[in-house]
Amino acid sequence: MFDVPTTWSAFLRGDIGNWIGAFLTLAIFSILWKENPIYRWCEHIFVGSTSAYSVVTTFSSTIKTGVQTNMIQNGDWWEIIPICLGLLIYFQPFPGYRWISRFPTAYWVGYNAGMGLTIRTFMPLLTYARTSMLPLIVTTNGAFDLMASFNNTVFVGSLFLTLLYFFFSFDFIARQQWILSGGRWIVMLAFGASFGTTVMSRISLFLGRAEFLLGDWLGILPK
Amino acid sequence: MSVDRWRKFIHMDKRIIYLIMCIGVVAPMFMTFGLPITVERPMQDFFNVIENLPPDSIVVVAHEASPSQISEFKPMLICLMTHIYQKGHRIVIQSFWAQGNALALEWSKSAFEANGMIYGTDYVCVGYRTGLTAIMDGARTNYINAYSDRDHYGNTLSTMPVMRGFEKASDIGLVVIFTGGSPGVGEYISNWQSRGDVMNMIACAAAVQIPPEMVRYQAGMLQGICGGMSGAAQYEKIMGMPGSATSGMDSQGIGHLTIILLVILGNIGYFIIRNAEAKERASRDAAVS
Image 1: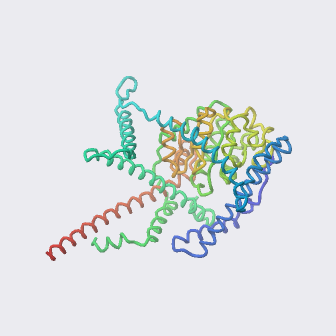
Image 2: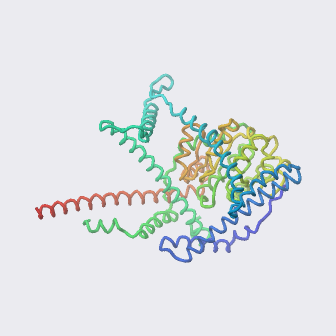
Image 3: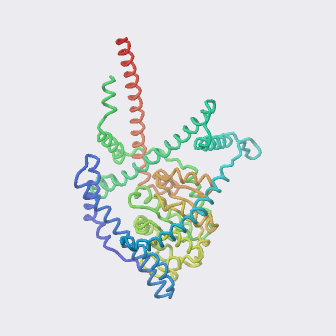
């Protein structure tokens, strides 16, 4: 049996937690009416508690665990080197020694640039390029598949128009303006789809809060 | 409606719009319409990937989420945990978002209790770590060492039955990524999939993340997507476990209809006012000349 401690958060699952949650939720919603000090106060609580949670969690789960297990128990004392390198960043506030803080920054920038150029950008880009090369005439079980062919044609056409829309190396003459216009339409359609899912997401967020207020707090939602 | 009324409508106080939206979303919570839910292909693929996994696979649930995503991710997690457990796989929860692990455990609690799932045997939470690239890179050769052999609560990972035979990332059968932003799917693809360690990846995406994840799905990087509350409702339908997402879809539907209606009315008003102003201008110019 493994240890799963009951934290004080269990205490907050009852009525007291609901009342605090309801007050904070309504206070944050009050910005919809107008700017007010209670909203500002709750916003500060939110920012402060989130930052504190991150600091404590990072310390207890990464730094403490790493030092206890890796260094003391496993004897991996070499890990003191990256720790010292990381601590150099705290020379930042001292103008005379600020140059020392550039060492960890330089290491981090170099490391991320290398990773970014290879696995983060180049490899996904190759996959996108490969999967974009679709056949315009599709056959399924030997027969012409009209729907799949239409879909692929729309996809490839949209891809070309969008790429050309962002091609700035030469001016399009009047007869070629339809390319720019087509590209703009495709981009606008994509923005529209993105806006639609954003609305959906925001409604979901509100729904979560409404369920909490009407269900968990007031208990008036039908079961 | 006269042009002046349209002008008033166009310049309506935004608080009235908030009120209309609020009524549109809350009212269906009291009167259920039961709008139809259709299982779409990305969701069906998502389901099939779990169905077709070899028995006793390791499924990593990467819960990259924050508390605001409760209405979308909680129903997904309940269905997902039940589904994975019923198929006889083992669950390893991880997150690179500070609150992700605790939220995954809290939101999945009802599924763990309903199925009698045992911590350490059926599922484990390895906890939060900073330094995503270093951890994921380390996990490619030794997953337990990358997590300093400690779980979310400080227990020893290597002695847990759930971790048997799980040494490195390539032992993972499937990664299910809950994505509410960054880090998210992109980091798992670049660190594990692009390097050939884990090829099976599916995503539970917050609605706002659906467009970028859909591109990855079409490119074959993701094998399935459960997107937004609509995806959660579809998952509940396939699993036969109607819950908060199914009931929430009525509110979603009416909320969307309200916005569509307001957009249409706003556009009608805009064109009517523009035409009226053009006519006024023309008659003024005619009077001057």
